[in-house]
Length: 182
Image (cartoon, rainbow, N blue to C red; front, side, top):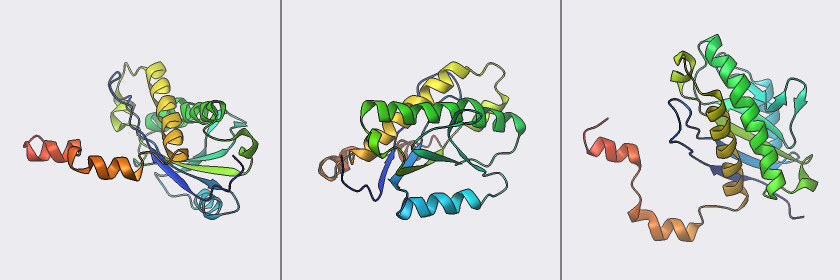
């Protein structure tokens, strides 16, 4: 794929694991010399209390390519939450990026030219769960990240699918509201 990737977006939800392990990353992917690169640089320098932005790393001092900036969707309020987000989940996001490169969703020859911004959701209950399954948490976030990238790079769901299924899909929390279960 030699075409210019200005901006692609995707999301994925992977749930059904042990308590507090669900993942729902949202990604923006694009060339570093375009709007995604500008946003990535701006976000990196615009740190905010409770919403730190950090690069996805395999371990300290090992940043992945394409450069991936994690942004928490939840206000970070405890060191326990920080340690899970900036440990297990950060490593999972990094591995999901590399899985996407390995799968061909991100062209390997563009690994140094693209940037990814990932909004990360980690259930706040993870910080207080004494038996949190870190292996499941890692695998679920890794899978969700790779899926979000796949969807972004393949423009999924397609507009044709969306138009065909618009009236067949009901947002689950809207349905819970209708059912009086919110």
